[in-house]
Image (cartoon, rainbow, N blue to C red; front, side, top):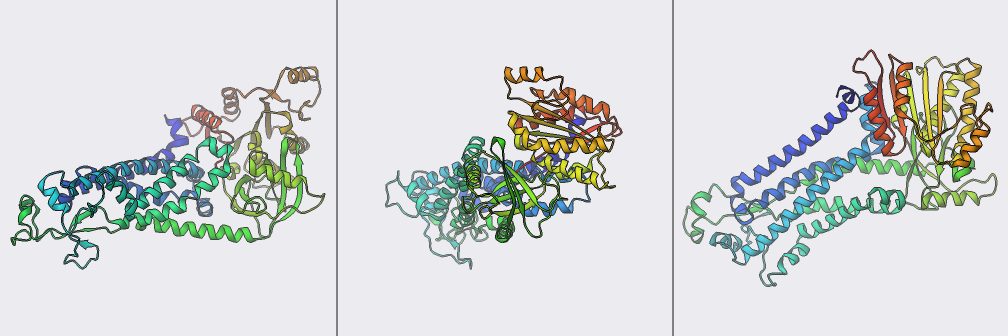
Amino acid sequence: MANWIINNGLTAFILVVWMAINIFLFLWFYFFYDLGDEYIYTRHLLGSALAWARAPAAVLNFNCMLILLPVCRNLLSLIRGSFMCCGRTMRKQLDKNISFHKLVAYMIALMTAVHMIAHLINVEWYNNSRRGSYDELSTALSNLEDDNGDDDDDNATTYLNPIRTTDINAQQTPTYFVFTSIAGLTGVIITLALILIITSSMEVIRRSYFEVFWYTHHLFVVFFIGLVIHGTGYIVRKQWNMELHNVTFCRGRSSDWGRIPQCPVPQFKGGPAQTWWWVIGPMVLYIFERVLRFIRYTQAVTYRKIVLHPSKVLELQLIKNGFKMEVGQYVFLNCPQISQLEWHPFTMTSAPEEDFFAVHIRSAGDWTDKLIDIMQTLPEGAQGPKMGVDGPFGTASEDVFDYEVSMLVGAGIGVTPFASILKSIWYKFKISNPNLRTRKIYFYWICRETHAFEWFADLLQGLEKEMEERGMADFLTYKLYLTGWDQGHANHARIHSDKDTDVVTGLKQKTNYGRPAWDKEFEQVRKENPTSVVGTFLCGPAVLAKILGKKCAKYSDVDPRKTRFYFNKENF
């Protein structure tokens, strides 16, 4: 348990606080509407469905306030920079922004379902009360006229039941009301928008049809506009003349309302609409975010070099005035020739010491395929199409040099942030940088096919040579794993096993066939670094993240004087 707390304690605390606020808001507003005297008459018409509709609405407001903040990339980068003086554990939370964004979205979906079902019941009960299907008091409350009351508030009127007509067939009235009232129509619109946003965000859609995910996700604009307007329908109303109209005395004397001084006609009002109080701040921040992205988009970007590597991996070396980066950071790219709206994230593979920034792009969908096709048709030495660049943005890998010992794990193209790190290390050794704190790096790269190693092998060969010349061959331990192999690969490797270099990569370190035995690897790292804090960094699939997260907890020692593993994962 203590080992788990080392890696996940602060995250768990933040989630507990978030959940506690959700529970508090739900219970507070549930009992406010279930016990409040001003809603006695409203509850007589709607019963407990009133509280079941309003309590989720409060939780929705809170989470709609939060949902945009984790995707304000520039805001997160600003916060990350302000936390550089603080502990790495605090900065790690910013790397889980997308996970928190999803969690908040799930809460919004759940509360929307409860809110919607409760209001569908409310509309049905409003309709039945309007048609006299219930008791005398319900009929009297539903038949109150909609003349303005004595209150100065324009929303204060006598009526309580928002269904004002009985000229339509009783079975069709709820549907008519939903599609003709402000609250009903906006409720339908934002629910449909939310359904499309959530369903298109599923992993299978996002991976295979990113464009569908991208475009439908921008329905959030429709969602927020509808959300702000939704509360102005004022279908949930409360009594405002309670001092003149004593409910306890008058509720059983509906026939005497307005006829005796003790029971004037009860008057009701709706609102005020509260949602905009919650979301206006995040919406303004997000607008600033989009304006800043647009400004960056308009800044000129030139191509330094375009290289097409094996396995359809495209390398772009770009130059942009004033662009400064750190290791492991990423940028968003937009190619107007392909799409004016789509932006895709790519980790930079260049080092901060270089006078350009580079990305490696693997063929993984329509957008990347079109970009590679465009680059293949260019004449040699020609500039590529216009490219918009937004960034750079920070990731967990920025903290790699804060650890004495680092374990870097890349899967496939997930090696890109570590290319930047290893290049930067090479430059730091070239100039004998005295500020380099890291004294040992373990690098693991897991690939399905041999061609994937080719574009990265030159960098590793350069590092091998540099470390040997400086007598620091032990500084970098790297292991390459080939998971997609057949018997032919194995036989070929066995025949050439006596060679000094690997038959696949040309490196001195031989390629391993299969997957890493992580228990063995972590045990070895702990044995070789008995008193170190080890940063474990992954850029790869969620399945591998779960495995490494568990291993970090398993092999971390509670004693702060001994080995501790801190898990960090790249998130886009």
